[in-house]
Image (cartoon, rainbow, N blue to C red; front, side):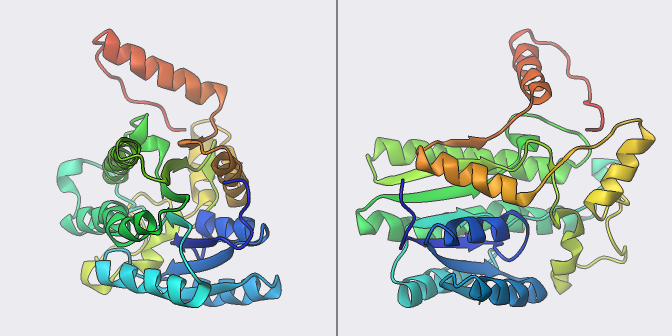
Length: 292
Protein backbone atom coordinates (compact mmCIF):
# COMPACT_ATOMS: atom_id res chain seq x y z
CA UNK A 1 0.00 0.00 0.00
CA UNK A 2 1.99 2.93 -1.32
CA UNK A 3 -0.66 5.61 -0.89
CA UNK A 4 -2.58 6.11 2.37
CA UNK A 5 -4.48 9.17 1.18
CA UNK A 6 -8.20 8.63 1.69
CA UNK A 7 -7.71 5.20 3.26
CA UNK A 8 -9.60 4.36 6.45
CA UNK A 9 -7.48 3.06 9.31
CA UNK A 10 -8.90 1.59 12.52
CA UNK A 11 -6.60 1.46 15.53
CA UNK A 12 -7.50 -0.26 18.79
CA UNK A 13 -5.70 1.06 21.84
CA UNK A 14 -5.27 4.09 19.61
CA UNK A 15 -5.50 6.93 22.10
CA UNK A 16 -2.02 6.61 23.58
CA UNK A 17 1.41 5.09 23.02
CA UNK A 18 2.12 3.40 19.69
CA UNK A 19 -1.55 3.55 18.73
CA UNK A 20 -1.63 7.33 19.07
CA UNK A 21 1.56 7.67 17.04
CA UNK A 22 0.11 5.43 14.32
CA UNK A 23 -2.99 7.64 14.17
CA UNK A 24 -0.90 10.71 13.48
CA UNK A 25 1.56 8.99 11.13
CA UNK A 26 -1.31 7.77 8.97
CA UNK A 27 -3.43 10.89 9.35
CA UNK A 28 -0.54 13.09 8.18
CA UNK A 29 -0.38 10.92 5.08
CA UNK A 30 -4.04 11.65 4.34
CA UNK A 31 -5.70 8.64 5.96
CA UNK A 32 -8.96 8.86 7.86
CA UNK A 33 -8.57 7.40 11.32
CA UNK A 34 -10.93 5.58 13.68
CA UNK A 35 -9.45 5.41 17.17
CA UNK A 36 -10.85 2.86 19.60
CA UNK A 37 -9.85 2.92 23.27
CA UNK A 38 -11.08 2.61 26.87
CA UNK A 39 -8.98 5.39 28.40
CA UNK A 40 -11.41 8.32 28.61
CA UNK A 41 -8.76 10.96 29.33
CA UNK A 42 -6.52 9.84 26.47
CA UNK A 43 -9.52 9.64 24.13
CA UNK A 44 -10.49 13.20 24.92
CA UNK A 45 -6.95 14.43 24.33
CA UNK A 46 -6.37 12.68 21.03
CA UNK A 47 -9.70 13.91 19.68
CA UNK A 48 -8.57 17.48 20.31
CA UNK A 49 -5.09 16.89 18.91
CA UNK A 50 -6.30 15.16 15.73
CA UNK A 51 -8.74 17.98 15.07
CA UNK A 52 -5.96 20.54 15.58
CA UNK A 53 -4.07 18.91 12.70
CA UNK A 54 -7.20 18.70 10.52
CA UNK A 55 -7.01 14.92 10.45
CA UNK A 56 -10.40 13.41 9.69
CA UNK A 57 -11.06 11.05 12.57
CA UNK A 58 -13.52 9.56 15.00
CA UNK A 59 -12.70 8.50 18.55
CA UNK A 60 -14.88 5.68 19.87
CA UNK A 61 -14.99 3.90 23.21
CA UNK A 62 -14.00 0.33 22.41
CA UNK A 63 -13.27 -2.54 24.77
CA UNK A 64 -11.38 -5.22 22.82
CA UNK A 65 -12.45 -7.91 25.27
CA UNK A 66 -15.96 -7.47 23.81
CA UNK A 67 -16.71 -8.65 20.27
CA UNK A 68 -19.82 -6.49 20.32
CA UNK A 69 -17.74 -3.42 21.11
CA UNK A 70 -15.35 -4.14 18.23
CA UNK A 71 -18.24 -4.68 15.83
CA UNK A 72 -19.58 -1.28 16.88
CA UNK A 73 -16.17 0.28 16.13
CA UNK A 74 -16.14 -1.39 12.71
CA UNK A 75 -19.65 -0.09 11.99
CA UNK A 76 -18.69 3.43 13.09
CA UNK A 77 -15.61 3.47 10.85
CA UNK A 78 -17.58 2.23 7.89
CA UNK A 79 -20.57 4.51 8.40
CA UNK A 80 -18.75 7.72 9.36
CA UNK A 81 -15.47 7.43 7.47
CA UNK A 82 -16.63 5.47 4.45
CA UNK A 83 -14.98 2.08 4.62
CA UNK A 84 -12.18 -0.09 5.99
CA UNK A 85 -8.66 -0.40 4.58
CA UNK A 86 -6.29 -0.89 7.48
CA UNK A 87 -6.89 -2.41 10.90
CA UNK A 88 -4.37 -2.27 13.72
CA UNK A 89 -5.11 -4.74 16.50
CA UNK A 90 -2.91 -2.73 18.80
CA UNK A 91 -4.56 -2.67 22.24
CA UNK A 92 -2.48 -4.33 24.94
CA UNK A 93 -1.66 -4.17 28.63
CA UNK A 94 0.98 -5.35 31.06
CA UNK A 95 -0.28 -6.99 34.26
CA UNK A 96 2.80 -5.93 36.26
CA UNK A 97 3.35 -9.36 37.78
CA UNK A 98 6.49 -10.33 39.66
CA UNK A 99 7.78 -13.27 41.64
CA UNK A 100 6.84 -16.94 41.36
CA UNK A 101 4.25 -17.81 38.71
CA UNK A 102 2.34 -20.04 41.11
CA UNK A 103 1.70 -17.05 43.35
CA UNK A 104 0.21 -14.79 40.67
CA UNK A 105 -3.32 -13.58 41.08
CA UNK A 106 -5.84 -15.25 38.81
CA UNK A 107 -7.09 -11.74 38.07
CA UNK A 108 -3.75 -10.82 36.50
CA UNK A 109 -3.89 -13.83 34.18
CA UNK A 110 -7.51 -13.11 33.26
CA UNK A 111 -6.94 -9.43 32.58
CA UNK A 112 -3.81 -9.83 30.47
CA UNK A 113 -5.11 -12.75 28.41
CA UNK A 114 -8.51 -11.09 27.97
CA UNK A 115 -6.97 -7.95 26.49
CA UNK A 116 -3.82 -9.18 24.77
CA UNK A 117 -5.06 -12.50 23.39
CA UNK A 118 -8.83 -12.28 23.21
CA UNK A 119 -8.51 -8.68 22.05
CA UNK A 120 -6.67 -9.94 18.95
CA UNK A 121 -9.06 -12.86 18.44
CA UNK A 122 -12.07 -10.57 18.72
CA UNK A 123 -10.48 -8.06 16.36
CA UNK A 124 -9.92 -10.79 13.77
CA UNK A 125 -13.52 -11.93 14.10
CA UNK A 126 -14.90 -8.40 13.85
CA UNK A 127 -12.77 -7.02 11.02
CA UNK A 128 -11.43 -9.83 8.83
CA UNK A 129 -14.82 -10.81 7.33
CA UNK A 130 -15.40 -7.16 6.41
CA UNK A 131 -11.92 -6.71 4.91
CA UNK A 132 -12.24 -9.91 2.88
CA UNK A 133 -15.72 -8.94 1.67
CA UNK A 134 -14.45 -5.69 0.15
CA UNK A 135 -12.36 -7.68 -2.31
CA UNK A 136 -9.74 -4.93 -2.38
CA UNK A 137 -6.26 -4.46 -0.98
CA UNK A 138 -6.28 -4.17 2.79
CA UNK A 139 -3.94 -4.61 5.75
CA UNK A 140 -4.45 -6.27 9.12
CA UNK A 141 -1.67 -5.46 11.57
CA UNK A 142 -1.20 -7.04 14.99
CA UNK A 143 1.01 -5.45 17.63
CA UNK A 144 3.04 -8.14 19.34
CA UNK A 145 6.27 -8.16 21.31
CA UNK A 146 9.68 -9.68 20.86
CA UNK A 147 9.22 -10.88 24.44
CA UNK A 148 7.24 -13.97 23.60
CA UNK A 149 7.44 -13.98 19.81
CA UNK A 150 11.14 -14.68 19.41
CA UNK A 151 12.70 -14.29 22.87
CA UNK A 152 11.61 -15.37 26.33
CA UNK A 153 12.42 -12.76 28.96
CA UNK A 154 11.50 -14.21 32.36
CA UNK A 155 10.56 -11.03 34.19
CA UNK A 156 6.92 -10.89 33.02
CA UNK A 157 5.66 -14.44 32.33
CA UNK A 158 1.98 -13.53 31.90
CA UNK A 159 2.79 -10.84 29.34
CA UNK A 160 5.31 -13.13 27.63
CA UNK A 161 2.76 -15.94 27.36
CA UNK A 162 0.15 -13.59 25.93
CA UNK A 163 2.50 -12.24 23.26
CA UNK A 164 3.77 -15.69 22.30
CA UNK A 165 0.16 -16.64 21.68
CA UNK A 166 -0.50 -13.43 19.79
CA UNK A 167 2.36 -14.06 17.39
CA UNK A 168 1.23 -17.64 16.73
CA UNK A 169 -2.22 -16.31 15.88
CA UNK A 170 -0.78 -13.55 13.67
CA UNK A 171 1.48 -15.85 11.68
CA UNK A 172 -1.32 -18.36 11.18
CA UNK A 173 -3.63 -15.58 9.98
CA UNK A 174 -0.94 -14.58 7.49
CA UNK A 175 -0.66 -18.16 6.22
CA UNK A 176 -4.42 -18.49 5.85
CA UNK A 177 -4.68 -15.26 3.86
CA UNK A 178 -1.89 -16.47 1.60
CA UNK A 179 -3.45 -19.90 1.15
CA UNK A 180 -6.78 -18.31 0.29
CA UNK A 181 -5.11 -15.83 -2.10
CA UNK A 182 -6.91 -13.04 -0.27
CA UNK A 183 -6.19 -9.36 -0.90
CA UNK A 184 -5.68 -8.81 2.84
CA UNK A 185 -2.03 -8.55 3.86
CA UNK A 186 -1.16 -9.45 7.45
CA UNK A 187 1.74 -7.87 9.34
CA UNK A 188 3.29 -8.42 12.76
CA UNK A 189 4.34 -5.18 14.44
CA UNK A 190 7.06 -5.32 17.08
CA UNK A 191 7.59 -2.00 18.89
CA UNK A 192 11.27 -1.31 19.42
CA UNK A 193 14.16 -1.78 18.97
CA UNK A 194 14.49 -0.61 22.58
CA UNK A 195 11.93 -0.42 25.40
CA UNK A 196 9.19 1.82 24.04
CA UNK A 197 8.27 4.83 26.15
CA UNK A 198 4.53 4.20 26.50
CA UNK A 199 1.95 3.82 29.27
CA UNK A 200 2.21 0.01 29.18
CA UNK A 201 3.77 -0.01 32.63
CA UNK A 202 0.85 2.06 33.91
CA UNK A 203 -1.84 -0.22 32.51
CA UNK A 204 -3.58 -0.25 35.89
CA UNK A 205 -5.24 3.03 34.94
CA UNK A 206 -7.59 1.05 32.67
CA UNK A 207 -7.91 -2.11 34.74
CA UNK A 208 -11.60 -3.15 34.89
CA UNK A 209 -13.34 -2.97 38.24
CA UNK A 210 -14.15 -6.68 38.28
CA UNK A 211 -10.43 -7.54 38.07
CA UNK A 212 -9.12 -5.01 40.60
CA UNK A 213 -6.82 -6.21 43.38
CA UNK A 214 -5.85 -4.85 46.76
CA UNK A 215 -2.38 -3.99 45.44
CA UNK A 216 -2.09 -0.46 44.09
CA UNK A 217 0.24 -0.19 41.12
CA UNK A 218 2.39 -2.96 39.72
CA UNK A 219 3.74 -5.53 42.16
CA UNK A 220 7.04 -5.29 40.28
CA UNK A 221 7.42 -1.70 41.47
CA UNK A 222 7.78 -0.60 37.83
CA UNK A 223 4.95 1.73 36.92
CA UNK A 224 6.68 3.77 34.23
CA UNK A 225 9.64 3.65 31.88
CA UNK A 226 11.49 5.92 34.32
CA UNK A 227 11.00 3.30 37.04
CA UNK A 228 12.44 0.69 34.69
CA UNK A 229 15.44 2.90 33.95
CA UNK A 230 16.12 3.30 37.66
CA UNK A 231 15.91 -0.44 38.27
CA UNK A 232 18.21 -1.15 35.32
CA UNK A 233 20.70 1.40 36.68
CA UNK A 234 20.90 -0.61 39.89
CA UNK A 235 22.34 -3.45 37.77
CA UNK A 236 24.74 -1.09 36.01
CA UNK A 237 22.65 -1.02 32.84
CA UNK A 238 21.82 2.18 30.97
CA UNK A 239 18.39 1.41 29.54
CA UNK A 240 17.82 2.78 26.05
CA UNK A 241 14.30 3.70 24.96
CA UNK A 242 12.41 4.22 21.72
CA UNK A 243 9.72 6.87 21.16
CA UNK A 244 6.35 5.60 19.87
CA UNK A 245 6.63 7.97 16.88
CA UNK A 246 9.70 6.04 15.73
CA UNK A 247 7.75 2.79 15.91
CA UNK A 248 4.87 4.26 13.91
CA UNK A 249 7.17 5.52 11.15
CA UNK A 250 8.89 2.14 10.97
CA UNK A 251 5.50 0.42 10.73
CA UNK A 252 4.15 2.66 7.98
CA UNK A 253 7.31 2.29 5.90
CA UNK A 254 7.04 -1.47 6.29
CA UNK A 255 3.42 -1.43 5.13
CA UNK A 256 4.50 0.45 2.01
CA UNK A 257 6.59 -2.63 1.22
CA UNK A 258 3.88 -5.15 2.18
CA UNK A 259 6.26 -6.44 4.85
CA UNK A 260 5.09 -9.11 7.29
CA UNK A 261 7.80 -8.34 9.87
CA UNK A 262 7.41 -4.74 11.02
CA UNK A 263 10.50 -5.09 13.10
CA UNK A 264 13.65 -3.16 13.90
CA UNK A 265 16.35 -4.85 15.94
CA UNK A 266 19.81 -4.12 17.29
CA UNK A 267 22.95 -6.19 16.95
CA UNK A 268 22.40 -7.36 20.53
CA UNK A 269 18.83 -8.46 19.79
CA UNK A 270 19.91 -10.31 16.66
CA UNK A 271 22.60 -12.08 18.66
CA UNK A 272 20.02 -13.16 21.24
CA UNK A 273 17.71 -14.49 18.52
CA UNK A 274 20.56 -16.50 16.99
CA UNK A 275 21.58 -17.81 20.42
CA UNK A 276 18.02 -18.93 21.09
CA UNK A 277 17.77 -20.72 17.74
CA UNK A 278 21.11 -22.44 18.38
CA UNK A 279 19.98 -23.39 21.89
CA UNK A 280 16.99 -25.20 20.39
CA UNK A 281 18.97 -26.85 17.59
CA UNK A 282 21.72 -27.93 20.00
CA UNK A 283 19.29 -28.99 22.75
CA UNK A 284 21.08 -26.68 25.20
CA UNK A 285 19.48 -26.15 28.58
CA UNK A 286 18.03 -22.60 28.72
CA UNK A 287 19.45 -20.06 31.13
CA UNK A 288 17.58 -16.88 32.14
CA UNK A 289 18.32 -13.68 30.28
CA UNK A 290 19.65 -10.73 32.22
CA UNK A 291 17.56 -7.65 32.78
CA UNK A 292 17.51 -5.62 29.56
